[in-house]
Length: 106
Image (cartoon, rainbow, N blue to C red):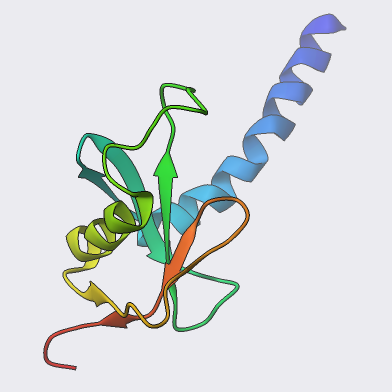
């Protein structure tokens, strides 16, 4: 009985990972100054891309190597090859950066 409950709990906890895997196909992971960033199109803001810094060391109050907005701009360029439009960049309360991109040849 306990084995069935454990299997059910494990299966239900893995279900959201399938949805995240679909999003991960479009997301690109880049390293900027030793910090890992994930850049992907923003679902909640059409035409914008989102840059999220991963805090793998779980150190919430560590100082950034460079201002995080500068890291985000480098992450946008590294992941997409396009530059972030500085006039549109903003940060939300969770620390994610959003910006429209300026791509060469478009």
